[in-house]
Image (tube, rainbow, N blue to C red; front, side, top):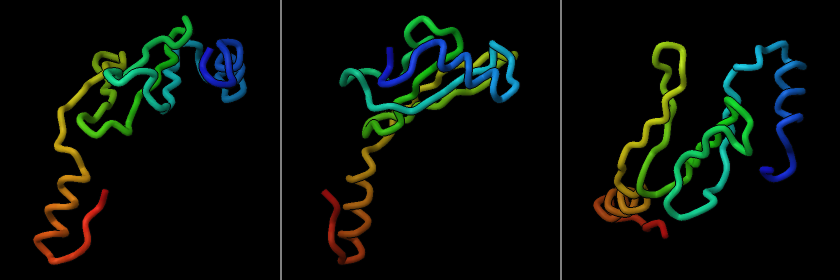
Amino acid sequence: MPGGYARADVRRLRRALGLQDDTPFVVGHHPRADFETFWMDVAGTPHHHVVYSARADRAAVFTRVAGSLVPQVYRVEPLADWVNRGAAAAGGATAR
């Protein structure tokens, strides 16, 4: 079970919002491991997905194809390196 809620909680939230059972329920979390970006059907709950959005080396997004959510992962340049190069070029302080 993810931190603090279970399958029944997701079901109750969907019902309280008047949503269908197959409405995607997407939340953001910290990665469970260094290599993960998505956690699909969390704890056996259909359509409950976690996206890890704070990774320095990739961006994780969902796109909808033919009515289904499809996870997409894109390699990115680490943001801190980009900020530091820009700051250094402007003669300013750098980030850690």
